[in-house]
Amino acid sequence: MVDIVAATGTTVTVPDEAINVVSGPYHSDSGTKSYVRGNFGPGALESKENASHLVGRLQVTLAMLTRPNGTPVWVKTRAIAILRYPLDTEIQDPPNLVRSVIIVGGFLQALQEDVATVRQIMSKSAPGLLATSSALTRGLGECTNEFFAKVTKVARKGSEKVNRRAPRRRRKG
Image (cartoon, rainbow, N blue to C red):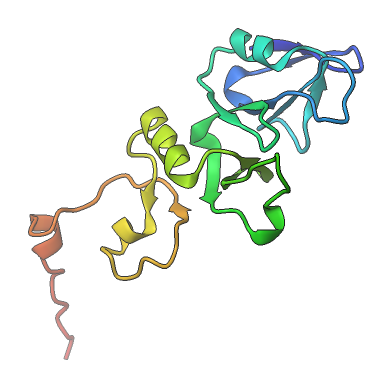
Protein backbone atom coordinates (compact mmCIF):
# COMPACT_ATOMS: atom_id res chain seq x y z
CA MET A 1 0.00 0.00 0.00
CA VAL A 2 1.18 3.47 -0.83
CA ASP A 3 -0.14 6.77 0.48
CA ILE A 4 -0.47 9.45 -2.20
CA VAL A 5 -1.32 13.03 -1.34
CA ALA A 6 -3.74 14.18 -4.03
CA ALA A 7 -3.53 17.69 -5.49
CA THR A 8 -6.57 18.57 -3.37
CA GLY A 9 -4.61 17.75 -0.18
CA THR A 10 -6.46 14.51 0.57
CA THR A 11 -4.32 11.46 1.35
CA VAL A 12 -5.33 8.45 -0.72
CA THR A 13 -4.12 4.91 0.06
CA VAL A 14 -3.74 2.73 -3.02
CA PRO A 15 -2.50 -0.87 -3.28
CA ASP A 16 0.82 -0.87 -5.17
CA GLU A 17 -0.42 -3.61 -7.49
CA ALA A 18 -3.37 -1.44 -8.57
CA ILE A 19 -1.07 1.19 -10.11
CA ASN A 20 -0.52 0.77 -13.87
CA VAL A 21 0.82 4.12 -15.13
CA VAL A 22 2.66 7.02 -13.49
CA SER A 23 3.48 10.10 -15.52
CA GLY A 24 4.84 13.55 -14.80
CA PRO A 25 3.31 16.94 -15.52
CA TYR A 26 1.83 17.99 -18.84
CA HIS A 27 3.38 20.98 -20.60
CA SER A 28 0.49 23.17 -19.44
CA ASP A 29 0.94 22.26 -15.74
CA SER A 30 2.69 24.63 -13.37
CA GLY A 31 4.88 23.22 -10.64
CA THR A 32 5.56 19.61 -9.73
CA LYS A 33 2.78 17.17 -10.55
CA SER A 34 2.28 13.51 -11.26
CA TYR A 35 -0.64 11.52 -12.59
CA VAL A 36 -1.36 7.98 -11.37
CA ARG A 37 -3.66 5.64 -13.29
CA GLY A 38 -4.70 2.15 -12.37
CA ASN A 39 -7.33 -0.30 -11.30
CA PHE A 40 -8.93 2.06 -8.81
CA GLY A 41 -11.34 3.98 -11.01
CA PRO A 42 -11.56 5.97 -14.22
CA GLY A 43 -9.26 8.90 -14.90
CA ALA A 44 -6.09 9.79 -13.07
CA LEU A 45 -5.21 10.55 -9.49
CA GLU A 46 -3.43 13.91 -9.62
CA SER A 47 -0.65 14.50 -7.09
CA LYS A 48 1.80 17.30 -6.34
CA GLU A 49 4.59 14.74 -5.79
CA ASN A 50 7.40 14.30 -8.30
CA ALA A 51 6.62 11.26 -10.50
CA SER A 52 10.07 9.66 -10.19
CA HIS A 53 9.94 10.03 -6.39
CA LEU A 54 6.49 8.43 -6.31
CA VAL A 55 7.66 5.51 -8.48
CA GLY A 56 10.62 5.02 -6.13
CA ARG A 57 8.24 4.47 -3.21
CA LEU A 58 6.23 1.76 -4.99
CA GLN A 59 6.66 -1.95 -4.31
CA VAL A 60 5.84 -2.87 -7.91
CA THR A 61 8.02 -3.02 -11.04
CA LEU A 62 7.28 -0.38 -13.66
CA ALA A 63 9.13 0.06 -16.97
CA MET A 64 10.30 3.57 -17.75
CA LEU A 65 9.28 4.61 -21.26
CA THR A 66 9.33 7.99 -23.02
CA ARG A 67 6.39 10.23 -23.87
CA PRO A 68 6.38 12.13 -27.20
CA ASN A 69 7.68 15.29 -25.50
CA GLY A 70 10.70 13.44 -24.05
CA THR A 71 9.43 13.13 -20.46
CA PRO A 72 9.33 9.73 -18.75
CA VAL A 73 6.24 7.62 -18.15
CA TRP A 74 6.35 4.52 -15.96
CA VAL A 75 4.16 1.60 -17.05
CA LYS A 76 3.35 -1.82 -15.61
CA THR A 77 4.01 -3.92 -18.70
CA ARG A 78 1.62 -6.68 -17.55
CA ALA A 79 -1.19 -4.13 -17.76
CA ILE A 80 -0.61 -3.22 -21.42
CA ALA A 81 -3.71 -4.40 -23.30
CA ILE A 82 -2.69 -3.22 -26.78
CA LEU A 83 0.61 -2.28 -28.39
CA ARG A 84 0.40 -0.87 -31.90
CA TYR A 85 1.87 1.48 -34.44
CA PRO A 86 0.52 5.05 -34.28
CA LEU A 87 -2.27 6.19 -36.55
CA ASP A 88 -1.58 9.13 -38.86
CA THR A 89 -3.66 11.35 -36.59
CA GLU A 90 -1.51 10.41 -33.56
CA ILE A 91 1.81 11.45 -35.11
CA GLN A 92 2.73 14.85 -33.73
CA ASP A 93 4.84 17.65 -35.14
CA PRO A 94 8.55 17.83 -34.28
CA PRO A 95 10.18 17.96 -31.79
CA ASN A 96 7.57 15.50 -30.47
CA LEU A 97 8.11 11.95 -31.68
CA VAL A 98 5.60 9.06 -31.73
CA ARG A 99 6.73 5.57 -32.79
CA SER A 100 4.25 3.40 -30.88
CA VAL A 101 1.05 3.57 -28.87
CA ILE A 102 -0.02 1.50 -25.87
CA ILE A 103 -3.41 1.19 -24.23
CA VAL A 104 -3.48 0.46 -20.52
CA GLY A 105 -6.88 0.17 -18.85
CA GLY A 106 -8.56 2.43 -21.40
CA PHE A 107 -5.74 5.03 -21.22
CA LEU A 108 -3.95 5.64 -24.51
CA GLN A 109 -0.28 6.62 -24.25
CA ALA A 110 1.88 7.56 -27.25
CA LEU A 111 5.55 6.63 -26.91
CA GLN A 112 8.89 7.50 -28.53
CA GLU A 113 10.05 3.86 -28.35
CA ASP A 114 9.30 1.79 -31.43
CA VAL A 115 7.07 -1.30 -31.31
CA ALA A 116 10.01 -3.74 -31.36
CA THR A 117 11.65 -2.03 -28.37
CA VAL A 118 8.42 -2.04 -26.34
CA ARG A 119 7.92 -5.74 -27.21
CA GLN A 120 11.42 -6.47 -25.97
CA ILE A 121 10.79 -4.57 -22.72
CA MET A 122 7.50 -6.44 -22.28
CA SER A 123 9.10 -9.83 -22.85
CA LYS A 124 11.83 -9.09 -20.28
CA SER A 125 9.29 -7.91 -17.73
CA ALA A 126 6.80 -10.74 -18.23
CA PRO A 127 8.19 -13.60 -20.34
CA GLY A 128 5.58 -15.81 -21.95
CA LEU A 129 2.77 -13.37 -21.23
CA LEU A 130 2.04 -12.34 -24.80
CA ALA A 131 2.29 -13.90 -28.24
CA THR A 132 2.06 -12.26 -31.63
CA SER A 133 -0.79 -13.17 -33.93
CA SER A 134 1.57 -14.83 -36.43
CA ALA A 135 2.77 -17.20 -33.69
CA LEU A 136 -0.79 -18.14 -32.83
CA THR A 137 -1.82 -18.69 -36.45
CA ARG A 138 1.42 -20.42 -37.44
CA GLY A 139 2.17 -17.78 -40.09
CA LEU A 140 -1.16 -18.02 -41.92
CA GLY A 141 -1.44 -14.28 -42.08
CA GLU A 142 1.02 -11.66 -40.93
CA CYS A 143 -1.22 -8.66 -41.57
CA THR A 144 -1.36 -7.50 -37.96
CA ASN A 145 1.11 -6.41 -35.33
CA GLU A 146 -1.29 -6.49 -32.43
CA PHE A 147 -0.93 -8.66 -29.37
CA PHE A 148 -3.29 -11.31 -28.10
CA ALA A 149 -3.96 -12.03 -24.46
CA LYS A 150 -2.10 -14.50 -22.29
CA VAL A 151 -1.14 -17.86 -23.77
CA THR A 152 -0.83 -20.56 -21.15
CA LYS A 153 0.36 -23.53 -23.21
CA VAL A 154 1.09 -24.13 -26.86
CA ALA A 155 1.06 -27.76 -28.02
CA ARG A 156 4.06 -28.78 -30.08
CA LYS A 157 3.58 -30.18 -33.55
CA GLY A 158 3.71 -33.97 -33.36
CA SER A 159 2.86 -34.12 -29.69
CA GLU A 160 0.33 -36.60 -28.37
CA LYS A 161 -2.18 -33.87 -27.58
CA VAL A 162 -2.19 -32.62 -31.17
CA ASN A 163 -2.30 -36.02 -32.90
CA ARG A 164 -4.81 -37.75 -30.67
CA ARG A 165 -8.31 -37.77 -32.13
CA ALA A 166 -11.45 -37.33 -30.14
CA PRO A 167 -13.32 -40.59 -29.50
CA ARG A 168 -16.03 -41.36 -32.04
CA ARG A 169 -19.60 -41.26 -30.93
CA ARG A 170 -21.73 -44.31 -31.47
CA ARG A 171 -25.08 -43.90 -33.06
CA LYS A 172 -28.02 -45.23 -31.22
CA GLY A 173 -30.06 -47.19 -33.61
